[in-house]
Image (cartoon, rainbow, N blue to C red; front, side, top):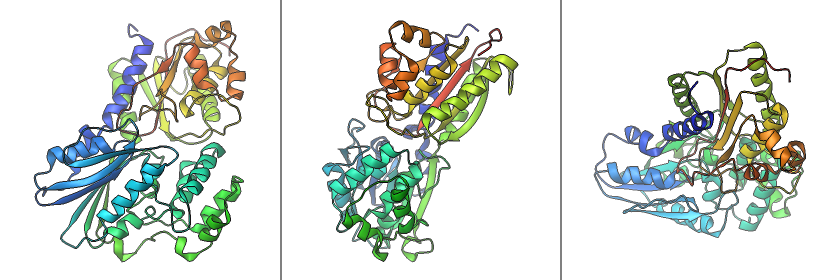
Length: 426
């Protein structure tokens, strides 16, 4: 193959991002009637880019406010763009959440609301329930992020501690018509999980939220425990009439990005194998990927090289050390430790929003030389993994991927490129 392996991996990543960008996917889903007044609200890492599309396409009066992560803004003329903190909410997110709720709290049945939703919206639209402080939510959020809890579990807790999530925003809009356009960043693409489902009914319960906190041994103040034990903490349930005029449309999902990358693979002469959206500990998911890569190299199963293994989803990291690095760096470090320089195997892992966890990189690239090159620098892959230091490991190899914010988010993207190579015992 004449294609440079690292360049191909970067092109696959770019293809995956482009397939989920608001500029590509939103316009076709907007209402056919784009005249008259519309109120636009939104939250997530793609919110500003989505707002730009609405401004460009809407023919009537447009106003509103959206919130996105710091650095993920984009210039809009009619819709205000506010930036706030992610993944741990801050005062800016609290303030804009109050404004959003006020903006939709006195509408009538002739009004239309467009809600632009994408990954990160749960932390960015932070309005704690009555009696719960922002500091409470911040500490619980931090603990959940370090615990290894899945995104669904984290959002179950977030919804029941919120005055705006779990369908409450949709209820506040009644009797206006609400159109929610969502870019999914969660395995399974469940509307109730994407940014904690502010405009859709939620079947989860406060008892489940309490059980999750107990499962991960997360201490909470008495005010939080008392709230979760109160019937008032329940979210808006399926069948609630206040959501009868609330419509939800998924406009981009991880599978679309994986399929777009698969097309790019075929065009470049490589057979793709899509594993789909995956969850689990990053280091363990990496071990499974390593096993598949070895099987391909040694036995040509489940497909022959040259090929590319593709996967997405949202893995988790249980923080044990003091190193730097998000989910994707952790995955790639574990993969490097597992493969130990297996010839002909290259890999990229990155977050499609351009930010791996809370670092300044989207992810990193592994080559067959990474393991030995790092060892020559005195870096042990297993030791760095113990310290959760994927960022430091790949920074030393000058192998970090820095994209800047992409203004979309269909979560993690992983590609393992396997070239034709002699069989190797590993």
